[in-house]
Image: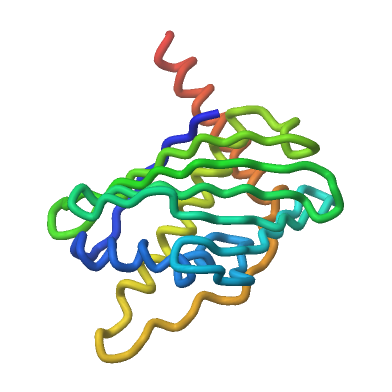
Length: 188
């Protein structure tokens, strides 16, 4: 499934690009993610914790930078994740594009995602809504990193907490109901 998200940060594109290319620094910005190992300049290992109601899942994830075009400010990462107790897997290709907007930067992210196991039973709309919430949290963390004074390094993101599927799911349900109500009003 293809998921498209975007966000803006209040920083010049050069600064946002430099931060996004520092994958070990931004992995902890993804809710529930923790960098576990740097293999080389383009490959990393991470752990992703997800809580779906009473089920806690921990994914070992291999992350690789597949391509980068600095002039166009585009980058492609791949992520291959397997649940540590054998309850599923996920594969993703994440394409990012940065553009200047009104003194800040717009980041467009297109994710091609494939899920297997228990996580795959959630509908496309639910996954897209959860991805949108995670993207907002990720963007907030990046903004904090970019807003740190130039003479002092930004504080590292807080220790990764599992992504709560229940909380994210409830938020997704509320947004889905809101869309449904708007569609009904528009059709009347």
